Amino acid sequence: MADAQDKVNMFSVKIHKSRGETLIACCDADILGKRLTDGELDIHVSEGFYGGDKVDEEGMMRFLSEATVANIIGERAVEAAVRRGIVEPSGVIEVCGLKHAQVFRV
Image 1 (cartoon, rainbow, N blue to C red):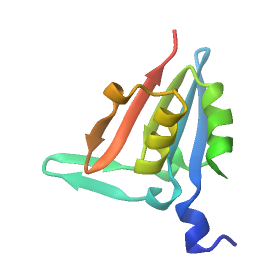
Image 2 (cartoon, one colour):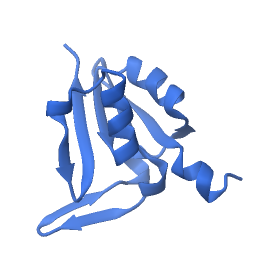
Image 3 (cartoon, rainbow, N blue to C red):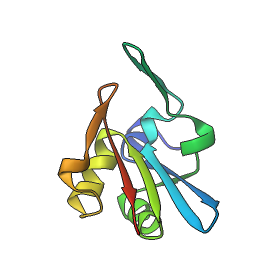
């Protein structure tokens, strides 16, 4: 079983396929299952959407390379995607105090 430090360095990645699209949902593993509220905004980083394989940064990048659509939330996940050129820094927003980005490949 992974200890708390391992969880901090991991990401949760889930594949959703529909109508020829491959959506990859990624989050920092330590925020999986949390509900984030900021005023009227309420975000649930749910197991159903984000809960999947627990991977390191390299593993997350392999999944993201297959995505036609990606939904990424969490400081480390978004920063890694920016660093690797998957997300443009100008496309990053803050939601409930966390970085969030979406990617669409056409």
